[in-house]
Image 1 (tube, rainbow, N blue to C red):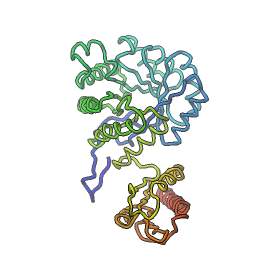
Image 2: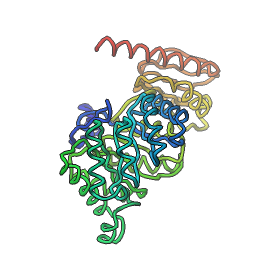
Image 3: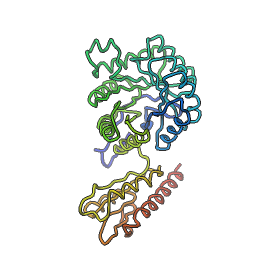
Image 4: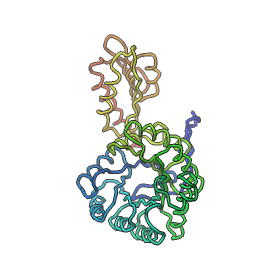
Amino acid sequence: MSLNHVRPWRNIYRRKSRQIMVGDVPIGGDAPIAVQTMTNTLTTDVAATVAQVQAAAEAGADIVRVSVPDEASSKALKEIVRESPVPIVADIHFHYRRGIEAAEAGAACLRINPGNIGDEKRVKEVIKAARDHNCSIRIGVNAGSLEKHLLEKYGEPCPEAMVESGLEHIRILQDNDFHEFKISVKASDVFLSAAAYQGIAEATDAPIHLGITEAGGLVSGTIKSAIGLGNLLWMGIGDTIRVSLSADPVEEVKVGYEILKSLGLRHRGVNIISCPSCARQGFDVIKTVEALEQRLEHIKTPMSLSIIGCVVNGPGEALMTDVGFTGGGAGSGMVYLAGKASHKMSNDQMVDHIVEQVEKKAAELDATQEAAE
C-alpha cells in the first residue's frame, strides 16, 4: 500500500488479495507488485534464452515467462530453470502434456489458458502435476481465445465473458483443492481489459496479474500499457504486471518499473525528473538526460535526480530530489544536494560530476539501509 499522511491525495489503497508464491517471490497480500516479462528466443536455444532471462533479471524482472510449445522445449526448460536467477513461469497453450512436463522440469508457475488447454479432465492432470511439484498456476484468460460456449452466449468477447471464463477455471482449481493460483483477464483493447479486470477483482480474492496483451511497439505499446495498467494500479488492482511490447524484454521491464515508480508503488534505480527544454535552457537537456540514463543504469538504489534547463522551475524541482542540476549562464549551472544549492559546475563537466554525485549518494543510502537492518 502506498500511503502518504502528509499528501493524502497521493494514497493508493491496494485491493486485498490472498498471497501465493511463485518460486521464492510472494505475490499478493502486502507483497510488492512484481514485474514480469517474457523471453522471445527459441526455448530450445538454451544459451540465448538464459542470456535473455539474465538480462531481464538484471534490469529488475522478478519473474520471467518462457514459452513451452513442444516436447523439446520442455526438455530445455529444465536447464533454463537451473541457470535462471529468477523464478520461471512456463507458458502453456493447446497441449496439457506440456504443462505436466514443465512442472516436472522445475517451473515455478504454469500459465494456462482455459480457452485452449483442453477439457476439465486434462486440466485436472495439470493441477495434479503442479501440486506434486510445488508449482503455482496462472489462469490466463484472453479475449482472443475465449471458450466457444461463452462466445455463443455473449456474441463477442466482452468483460462479462472474460470474467465468467476466469471464474469457471477458478472453480475447477478450487474443486480440486488447489489454491496457489493467480489470474489475468487480458485484451488488446484498453477499455475491455480495464472492465474485465475490475469485474474479476470484485469476484475473487485471488492475486491478479495485469497486462494489456499485444499492446504494440515500444512507443505505442508503452502508452497503451501506461494508460491501462496505470489506471488499474491507481485503483488498487494488480499484484503482478507485464508490459507486452514488440521489443526487447528488457524494455518491458523498464517500462513496468517506470509505471510503478510514477505511482509510488515500487522504487528501483534513479528516477530522473527533467524538463522538455526550450530556448531558455542553459545546456543541452535532451542529450544530457540521454547520457545520464545510460550511465546510471547500474544504480539499483531508489533515488531521485532533477535535470532542469533553467532557473524557472529548476530550484523548485531540486528541492524535492536527492541530486539536482539547474542550468544557469556563462557555461555553468548549479548543483543541488539533498534539496539545497551546493556548488556550481561547468556544463562540459556536468555529466561526469552528476554521475559521481549520484553514485556517492547511492552508497550513502545503501549504508544507511544496511545499518537499519
